Amino acid sequence: MKPWRLVVCLVLILAFSIGFTLPAAQAAKRTKAKTEYSVVIDRLAGLTYVFSRKTNSTNWDLVGAQICSVGNPFAETPKGTFVVTRKKKTSTFAGKKYKYVTFTNCPKVVIMTEPKRNKKDQFYQPLGEPCTMGEVWLAQKWAKWLYNKIPIGTKIYIF
Image (cartoon, rainbow, N blue to C red; front, side, top):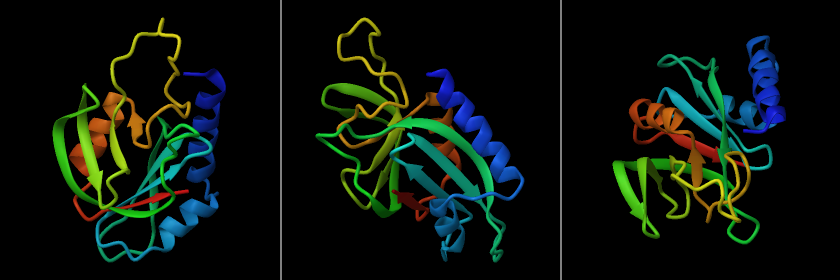
């Protein structure tokens, strides 16, 4: 992970804790979500934000922010609002095994763990760089947390 991305994550978490919000986070907070969670993915910054609220509350709180990898310039992750439709503990894509896979109503929007990759590979990109075929890669700990906590029907906003 690049040091500047870690600094950006920490600054954003601090900013959210004192009341600052990004436009996408404000949109997520205004949503009429049916679940207690809302996920926002910022493709440009390579960050995933999770917000939660109590049932029947309009106040959304930042649960966490995490670095993610999204689609490369030739296979971009789509923008828009999507809904979690199903989950699988493991799944295989293009011959690689992924854990904690969360699917949405768009076949191209899939959230999963970062695959095991060789850092010596000439095409290796660290987590946080746009390097996927459109899916969203997260560190295993964060992908597992999303898999276990985010219910089917949760809205995912990608901008």
